[in-house]
Each structure stands twice: as structure tokens, then as C-alpha cells.
Length: 426
Image (cartoon, rainbow, N blue to C red; front, side, top):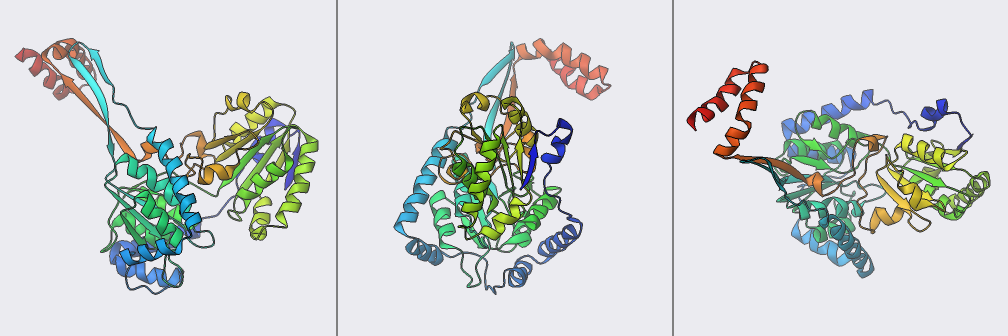
């Protein structure tokens, strides 16, 4: 951990910098794989599954028999936990439904919006060392509520050719339509372009490594929408001398174990707390199975000692973290000052894990400072707002002269004529 004590504001940009990744060569590799998938479809995906995921598949689709077998192999306790999380995620996102409002902007002129679901969406769920079945719930549940008619999921299989059964169980509970065994860049290409097996989708959601993120960004330039730009996961903890050092250390480590390129940031007004957290980090890190990964992430990370609550919040907002945890005596007061964050966790008991799994909020969030402009995944992510307007004869009289005048001022005479003809007909 890097430790900064009372840094000058000129150094804040350095403190909030993310680890830099040179993706020049990576982009060329990603482009090559995407082009091949676009040209050869299933054959290319199957080839890349053998090359990258080390599994030879005869087909990409997960069968009903595999789904039934997965349901039998997941323990009752885990099924109950998945259902509890799903119910909470459903309740939170159901409450986000759009209420249509009709507005009479002038006599005879009525305008309104309707919320229309994206018909076909694609979800990418990483496998590997941490199969993220919780992300299935986070992405598929709001898609189902929104009314998406087809929810396609791609996830890499293991070397035995099977998908992690908890991923399949979560997909069944959340209402996924079709599941395919495909990972990495080839999965993103399959959903972006469509193959003989995988349908082309209109928007792709989900996390992944730097290759997956690069693939999402490349296909978003021409072919399909994506949820958001994203980088490695991160957390910022804001704490004062009342914070529980063991809780703070646990929160930092729960984020650090995501990956070597993850980042954690502790901002505090208490030097004593900073020292206690360091001690707790050492003790807890030694007990983690993924301690090598977490330790590497901590090398990208910082402890910052500042003089006041004002500076804590200003620095946190400058960092714009994916996850923001506020463990202070006045956490509700500080919460009102949050400007830039993906998801906020308040008080000593709101650990990031709660939001990652089962509180009900979505854990698919903007990283790398994108919280300054992007929201996390929510019900609106799966919908479009289509605007409508209806004019009566009275409406034409109300706004017609203004439309004519403005169109002519922009030298768009055909625009003006469209209204002039209607005025003349009255």
C-alpha cells in the first residue's frame, strides 16, 4: 500500500489514477478474433473455445438436460440463497418502472413518452477462477422485468465441456431464454454479429477481462450497444476514528481479491485508524485462499490521511469509485454529499458484499472514473423511451407560426412548408 499523509491538492490526480494498461497489441488480437467470428460464425467460436478455453465442443447451446442436471447438483442451501437474492433484486428493480406522463405543452399539443423494452439482449458471464453466478441475477432479472423478449447468455465452459451449475441455476431462476458455451472475445463477437447458433442481440451487458472489455468497446462502434465502458473493479472506503478497523480491512480485501488489477483506496481523518487497518490487512490477508491476487491488487492501492470530512468527500468524489463505503459517525450526513459513485454503502454493517449479492441493488457498475457520467445497470438499461406527439387543429394554430418562423430562419424551407400547408388547410 502507498501511504499519503495530508497530500496537497495538486497531488490528488496522482492519488486517484488507475493502473495503466497498454492495450495496443491487445486491440489487434481482439479485432482479429472478432473478424473471424463475423466471417465463420459457429466454426470460429468452436475453434477459439478449443484454443482459449481448452475444450472441444460439438455444439454451443446448453441443453435442457444440462439445465436439469445442474439443478439437481446445486445444494438446497445455495438454491435458497440464490432465490433470496433474486427476490431482493427483483423487488428493487421492479420499483424502477417508468410511469407515463402526458404533457399539454400548448392548447392542442400533447407530448408523452412510452418505455419500450429492448427486444433481444446479450449477457456475458465470466467463468474461470470465480464463476459469477450472482452477475446472472444482476443482469437477467431487470431484463425480465423490462420485458425483453429474448435474453441470451454466453459463458465459458470448463474443460469438461460443462457450464458451472450455479450459473445455470441462476439463469433458470432469473428467466434467461437461451444459454451458450462461449467465453471471451468470441462470445462477444457471436452476440454482436450473430452466428448459426447464437442470435444477434441489440445490446450486450456484463463484465470480463481486458480482452472482453476491448471486444465490447470495438463492437459498440458499429454493431451493437453495450452497457457501459468498464475497467478493473475498485472500492473507496471513507472512514473516521469511529470505524471498525477489521470491517474496513475486510472491505478492502473483498475488493482486492477480484483481480490483480483491482484497486482499493482508503481515505481517513484518523492516523490511528490507518495503522489499525494496516495491522488487520496483514492478519486477514494471510488467511485468504486468493491472497496472492489480493496482495498484487494492494500494490495498486493507497491509504490517504486528510485533515477533515470535507476533504474526505472531495477526494472521494474526485476518485469517482465503482463502490463507495462510508464508515463514519455521521455517514448519513456525508451520504448527502456524494456526487460521483457507482454504488454507496452506508454505516458499519453495509459491506460491499451485501450489494454484490443480495441487498437488491445492482452490482454491474461504472469503473475507472466513469461514475462521473455513467449509472450502474438498472431497469432503464433494458428499455428505450420513445416520444410521441399529437397535434389537433388547435395545436397547429398554437405553434404553427413559430415553427414556420424558426424553420425559415434556419433556411429549411421544406420544414416551413410542411407546417404552412397545414395552417393553410384550416
